[in-house]
Length: 62
Ligand SMILES: [Zn+2]
Image (cartoon, rainbow, N blue to C red):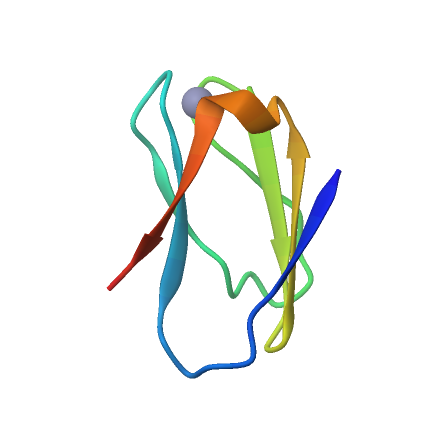
């Protein structure tokens, strides 16, 4: 589990490399899985947790 600090107001998404799902990091503390279930994202305004297969996800800034 790698906590990712996000102190900027940039929109950050976590993309699953397996199914291509892009999950917004702001999930309002609700655990949000991707379509294939390899990763789940649990985010708030200043902290993002990615749970699952970390090697299968990448961080995207929009
Ligand atoms: Zn997936």
